[in-house]
Image 1: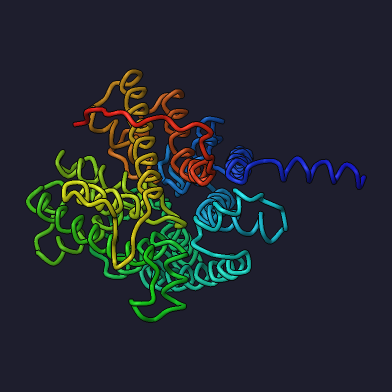
Image 2: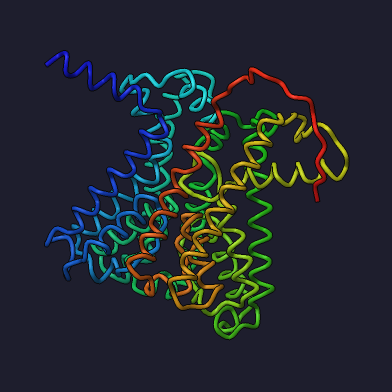
Length: 447
């Protein structure tokens, strides 16, 4: 028996850490699918495709749905959904450090390099300290969020149903999942002050990334923050201001969205909520099918950018977008060195940005092509759906319900890659191989 355990352990340790994590995600999706197919999980029996799509959306914390969780799932089914959201949202950090470090599974030199770079730590001891910080932050934030939301949902539904609804939405918001137990989403609470305070706050904190949160909690001065934290905080603030302002300007007189509200305060409140959610979660307080095409394009760009590394959100990440912008500015200014906040950014990081962006664009383009070729629908709706799946956002213009079995498979794969793809790519980018042969430089014409 001991020999068998050694052989199993040897084979497990030989698996690259990102592949192991991807398999864990896949395992949770299969487990969730099986649980959703249980007769006591739903009021109406689910097809295997709907169960698989829902489980994939939950584990990848996307929020795209083909069934209504509030009406079709029983309490057990909603609890399974919530557990998958929690595991999926924390999987990137928790499994990377807890499974591979706490269980003392060797990850190899390149795996350690990847974990150290991805979590911005210098030792396994510091990584385990970060794990403890993660659980502390999760418990505190979700508890505070649920407590605040109780002030809205308990008077509406009663104590126990309201408490469950508050907890469900708090966990869903912090993990940037966007699942709701209300058939209309949060549209009925568009001007509710508690919902507009608690949900965006949870989305922002969950989207910053635990490395940034840990940095803020350990250092109370801006000068002591790491370069990563400074870029994330300034980049996130800039994107929030941009998205809130753009949504307000573009939709101010649209009778299907902001124009439906009489007061300027109500319109600004709705703009605040809808400006925060596109980069992270699929909550909405207006009908996304009613927004202008220009607004839809703005939302697509935000969904593709996403939130922060080591966070519960998807996309190419804010840091990738900021470094790409800095590299572009440096090129036009003919600078040979990239820097920010008094720190230089190595060329290897710029190459990673280029690789991540190129792969993301190709994946989104392929998804749009496959859905356009197999489905009838507005091109913008298709693009919106694919961008939402890749960014694990969950916003939709009503196209999710039109997906065929093939379409669900395409979106499911995009959701999965959008969640675990950057992790796998980061591992291979972290490996370094020195060329055995050097060739003379050649000249090509670009642009």
